[in-house]
Image 1: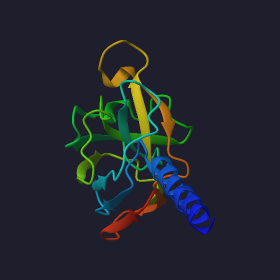
Image 2 (image 1 turned 135 degrees about the vertical axis):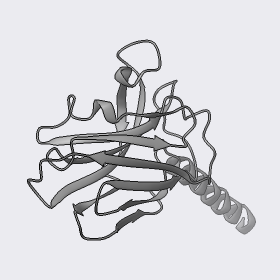
Image 3 (image 1 turned 180 degrees about the vertical axis):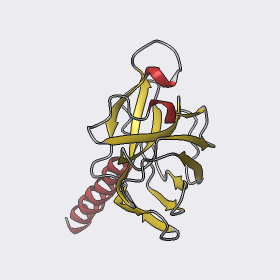
Length: 186
């Protein structure tokens, strides 16, 4: 009887650990960082340790940085994500009042994702009204798919889900040197 009881406990523990591992799989990166130059660019390195929880067949991804709308006027983004794209031209279109969301992404990441590999993305900004030396910021991972039309185009991508709370949040300060933000184990 003692052996059977211990076997049940070990089996229950193994199933619990297995379920926890599946629950930790995600459509957004588990680890990463965001570094802002204090001037006109920011970089992010990020990696997935497991993949899951995707709700669309396409399984696209966007790394979306929300700033106050006066801080910059426009940007260009770069990324090494598979099937990568610059989503900066859509900033300010249908974004929350008083904000612009600058993004880069992948049209189809779910089936092209390399686990434990650090992907890279960068934003290069221009303009800005000069109304402030700081801006609140938040970085979210979003699952996206071609929602508005049946082909891959930045104007067609719609978000299916987004990280809540953000991967990182805080403030950017102009002319204050390099500022860094990190997340682990999301």
